[in-house]
Length: 67
Image (tube, rainbow, N blue to C red):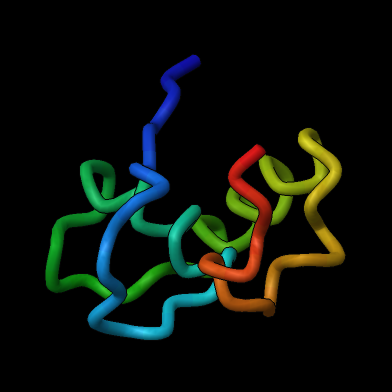
């Protein structure tokens, strides 16, 4: 399993959702310019479910608590 780190103190240029951030973790598998496949979305939702964040998938990631 790999873990990603998102620094808590940063300036937001784009309003990414939680699901968008998780999908960015799949870029190495699909390439930077490729769209997320249905399999990518399903995998991302599975991972969100595994940490109890499925209900937060569509909210802005900056609205999540860092603590």
